[in-house]
Image (cartoon, rainbow, N blue to C red; front, side, top):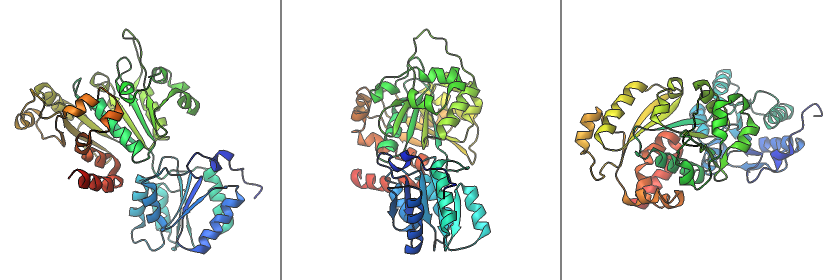
Length: 398
């Protein structure tokens, strides 16, 4: 195996995340994979049980590794199982699938779904070794099972609570669901995300937007603000009289780079900037329109729905009506009539949550009723991976 590039030492020594996780059914295949990884110098692989179902269950609770090997033998609908797996894998995880069938149609379908390789049993050590090495060293076209998901948070009026909701959802996915999450605050002169997360905004987001050619992995490593191990913030706090100009191509380039590195990318957008980014708004994404229950907000929800257009297979718009029963709010029937449609998610005014939003994310985390009202938003973002947690929440608060 001297012709293979050496696996980087960092792969075998990553903090808390094994370089490879393996879920096979039979001991013969497991023994062969152990030998292959050992020959590559991978010192701390993790071997689980239960095949692809075991992988899905465990990775819903922990960070996925650079290399993942799963067994689909005996699975009635392997492509459906792979879709479930994609919901709990980080971008950048290279997936090798092992099965019992030599089926070229299945192989092509799985390659189209994003797996790196499919091998049928009995496994061949030289072939498996080469595939594992290619993923761990990045020397040949590794494909992740899925790129990151883009979540746009658009407050239709100032004070609607878009930043609070974006930050709470991003915090949950990073802390409770153990996903790598990026939160971007596009308000470069008076954004509140850094205050809510109790960190200091830097100036790197402005640099990234005004000079997109400078953005590479090293720039991101130094420029983002690390809130926790899995939650990063990209924000700037520029002088109020700053004139900040950037093209839509710069924003598109930045998002493309981030989606290759994070499972979820949340973008907190201002309406005045969003209207000038038509291609950005029509990227594959979930766009949350967030409003309060005022008459002007109802009017603007209707206008934004018209601008964004109908949902597609890759993009959907979801309206969150926040603070629906706050003092001075329109009755819900009046709001629906003015907006032209009922909200998809209704979050009632919560005095404790309103106060906690001024005290920071750790206080906001204690507002269970506010978070419970956002469960449908989490379902839309995270899909099936959040179902178990929603059921648990229902038992706790129900």
